Length: 536
Ligand code: HEM
Image (cartoon, rainbow, N blue to C red):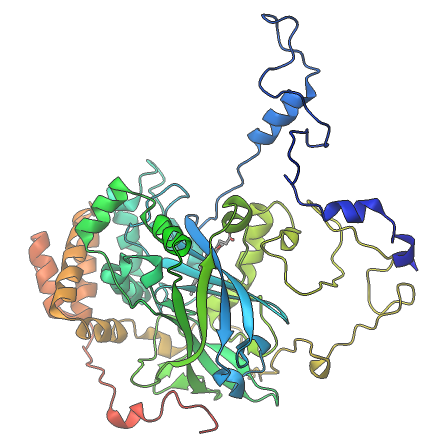
């Protein structure tokens, strides 16, 4: 009934009009202006009049142009593109966008983690790699990084690790330029951070280009096929251009000479038609009750599964082919969320992932000024939205109807009954075993060093030299000797040779390891088990 009533509502039509479409200068109310360079004054040399609404509108709007930057990943660059599914994943997921030759528009934002919006691109840091897929079943976000592991195993420590890594609170000087004590204090007291820290200290921490980085979903996800069968997976992006890094001297000089190096590189490449591409791939694991694979806990985000054990199988191709038109409207206002899922993809019990499911929406309500940011053009799904969310700050939809609840008998009585058969999103009914409430983690989370050692052992001599140099440089900025000594013990637990070299660079004695060293070697027999499609 009310739809009919609103058919001729001019407001609905007007909201469709694009801003800045006209060829003439107007006020925000559309009134034509004859000039915008002089305030309204009492005489050419007189005081400015309070009644000058155009002056006040223009300056007031300018005063509010900035929104808070992201609390992490504040500095970023983004691009539009297309994702084409190979169809190979159709065997393990019913997600439509992974079907054969299905093309899906995407928006990808790359970022550094710790620096502010105006910081330099080439600093040593983890990089964000967040992809928004505008699928025919709604938005799916893959909010990943360029490193496959994370510093912590539980989201409750996220504020702590970020506080430790951000500029020191007294002088607001970034870690990379002054004291490094809080970062090294945290990662040596919370040794679960050892693996990610080693990736940061390696060449992966200073990528050559966003176009030459891998991306990782980090957590284990659960895919669901049309029959409801499930498979655990880890997502990987593999760049067609290969993985390349800067060397430290290049990174430092570039940070000074061209702090926009990475965003310029991405925009220039796309503008010149050299479209960067990545293959999306998955490592697959049987969805067992333990959620372990070859002794590796799939719910521990500080662990990888070596590709020798579970090869990455390609499932689609991403091509970035268009730069944003407006940085603020697109790159700044885009809002990713780990909980933006489509049928066929579900989360797991990873305690880091579970905390992220809360955090992103919460922070975006502040950052984007209220709960309606899904209506911003960059965040809008490319499918009709028919929700029961109403009103709130910056509401730009003009909702028709009188009954924002389902079922109802007034607005056409549309039943709210989309089950799996009707294509609706249904969470996998995973068993939750009877358990006691605890603030604790599984014993399998206690091993903080063996995979860091695996990473170190896989490095070439040159890569090892770079790692030694970066630990020596970064730890030399630590003012507290106790923290340096603790860091050396962590290095001894990775590899005594690594520890000895950094200790000598710092002029300190090399401590002995405090844990038994293991040399994890994927056996050939194991490599035949991993990464096979469940139906093989
Ligand atoms: C932003 C990745 C862990 C909270 C981001 C972004 C990425 C990312 C790529 C930038 C998104 C963009 O470009 O707009 C990751 C990865 C994690 C992780 C891969 C671990 C595997 C966490 C955790 C929390 C968290 C544990 C909190 C409990 C945030 C917040 C933002 C953010 C608050 C800013 C969001 C915004 O303002 O739009 N993260 N993150 N992240 N992340 Fe994470």
